[in-house]
Image 1 (spheres, rainbow, N blue to C red):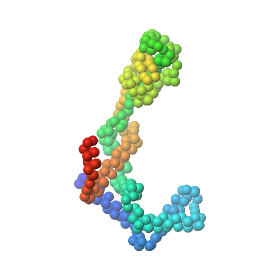
Image 2: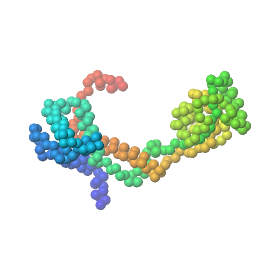
Image 3: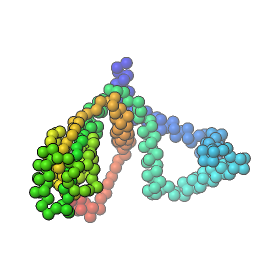
Length: 286
C-alpha cells in the first residue's frame, strides 16, 4: 500500500495520466463520424445543451421554430469553423493560440487538482507561508489635532496642549477642528497609513497604552495621541481561517500543476531560438 501511495504521488505518473485523459477526451469529442469533412452530426446531447442554454436565457423552453433556428445556427457555426480550418485561418492567429492555450490549461488543471485538501496539507501550507496569513496588530486611540493652518507656532502650541492633556484636561475641548475622527478603534497599521500616512503609522504603531504622547506629525498636521488598547499581531489557527487558507492553497496548486504539466510537455520539443543581433546587443547592455 505504501508503494502504491508513493507511486500515485510521482509527477511522471500524473503526466502519463494527463496524457491518457487527453487522448480519451479527444476521442470522445471527435466521435466516429467527424472524420468526414462534409458530414455534420447534431446529436441528442448537443440539442439538449442548446435547449438548456435557451431556457437559462429566456426562462422558458423554445418553440419548435426556435429550436430549428438554434440547430441551424449551430450547424452554421460548425460549417464556418470547418471552412476556416480548411483555409488555415487558425494559423498564426495570436487570439486563437491564446484561447487554445487557456482551454488546455483548464483541462490539465481539472485532471490533476485535488480540491479537498486535508488538514495536514493546509497546516503545512499555513506554516510555510506565514506572511500571507499573519494578522496585523490592532490599536485603538484618540487624537487631538493641531492644525498648521490655524497656528504659526505649531510645535510650541502642541507641547502646551500636551501638558494640558496630561494634567487631565478634556481632550475634546482642545485642539483644532478637522475632518479626522476623534477616536479610532481596532485599526491596523495599514488602516492608519491610509489616513495619516506611513510616517505617522510607524510612529504610533508600536505605542503601548499609556498617557497622552506626542506630538506626532502627518501630512495633515500635528497629533497628540492616547493609545487606549493594543492587540498584538499573531498567526491565526487553521480553524479560524480555513476558507482563506484553502483558497490560497488551491491557487498555489493550480500554478504549480500548470508549471509541472508544461515542463513535462516541453521536454518533448526541441526549442531553437534565433535572436536578432540588435536584441542580443540590447540584452547584453541591460
